[in-house]
Amino acid sequence: MTMILADADIQSIWLTVRLASVVTVALLILGTPIAWWLARTRSRLKGVLGAVVALPLVLPPSVLGFYLLLAMGPDGPVGQLTRVLGIGALPFTFRGLVVASIFYSLPFMVQPLQNAFESIGERPLEVAATLGASPLDAFFTVALPLARPGFLTASILTFAHTVGEFGVVLMIGGNIPGVSRVASVQIYDHVEALEYAQAHRMAAVMLIFSFIVLLALYVWRPGTMKTTRKD
Amino acid sequence: MGLLRTFLVLLVCFGCAVSSAHAEKITIAAAADLKYAMDEIIAGFRKGQPAHEIDVVYGSSGKFHTQIRQGAPYDLFFSADISFPRELARQGLAAGEVRPYAVGRIVLWSSSMDAAKMTLADLVDPKVTKIAIANPKHAPYGKRAEEALRSAGLWDRLQSKLVFGENISQAAQYVQSGNAQVGLIALALVRNPELSKRGGYYLIPENMHNPLEQGFIITRPGAGKPLAGSFADFMDSKQARSIMTKYGFALPGDKTGK
Image (tube, rainbow over all chains, first blue to last red; front, side, top):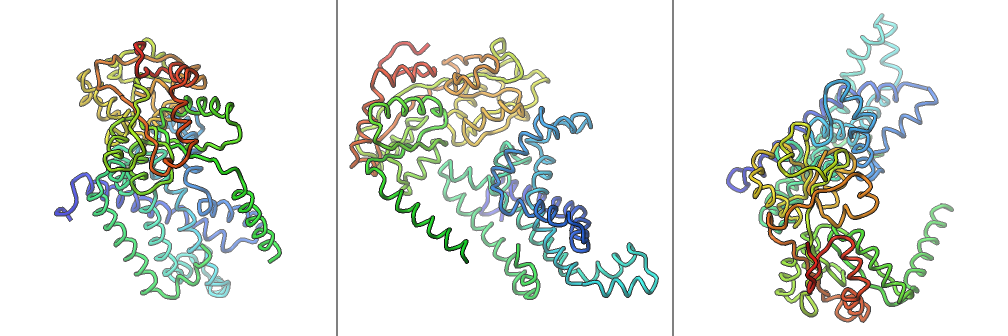
């Protein structure tokens, strides 16, 4: 890869991989309880939370970027909170991008997980309960292993979707090398600067990567995509 | 099903409404620094010709350059850097010559500090943690900002504080929202009432950077449209020139560019 890509390009790809990995891990931790609750609850709030989780699917990234920029800015509620906590301002930082991407990729984690949990059904958990397992026990020893394909799909989709992020990063990132200049932004810059050769090379890398990820999902796990069709 | 049908009917109606509109219509691609000035100029022009429709798109000059090369249907292209329209003219993508229309200036501006009392040297102050400029890689105002910081001998020292807007208007928005304390942005943008009420600005001396010579062309798609030609001529009118001057642009054939 060093042969065809410049150092700055590799830096941006590496940054993208780092961002997508951190976001995937963070969303595994945050998304699992949300998906579990959505799958099990009969509360009327289920519809509301489900809709909130799905919002990033339909919201333009510019809307999300705009709100995040204002909210995380020095006068915004999140910005004031982070200042009090001593974290400092979030826009133009890697941390800020992680926070934004968590919102942006939330449905890609939660929805496949929710589907996986729902397809387990009540039965295995009831059996676990009669055998004396606590709800937490049943979750870790029964639900989690049964939902493993769902976790795989959710993680791959979340990772890939974060790699494909552009609009939100452009709005709150500030295009800083090594901090917020991710691969998609780097390609955009190449195009704007009329450096088509570099843009072509990076775009090809992204295209091949995305195709391989989706190929893996469709070919190796033919059943999984059907259950997540609604996202 | 009923909903879908209603939607389709509406869509068809909308299509008819659009196609039956007035024939004379042009689309202008304008550099982001022209945002407020061009809006006023178009409003002035339309007063004389209310029947016509003028769409304007603001963005980075480099992007418009690329898009026009790829056949974008803009009839006029106002660039923040005259080299872009010159390049297009060389490639035969312009109808007629490249017309210089203004020389832009950059300023130091802040929405939280009084930038009028600042100079570039104040940017090393630790209180300033983020400085917004347009991306020097492709935005003309970003290039000039980089040149100014280099002439001041500050470019290397300020590297860790710089954030890059996709175009000059995004750089201004980073400052306006307070996410960057200061920015090196277009004078034309801070002359807008909305921004100018938020503190003063420091005009960066002209000799610290190459001139921001701006030019426009009528593109090939605009060649056959009389409206494009009359709008181009309107740029030379007293009214348009006074609007440009109000926004801090120095004009070709004028000696008031101080």
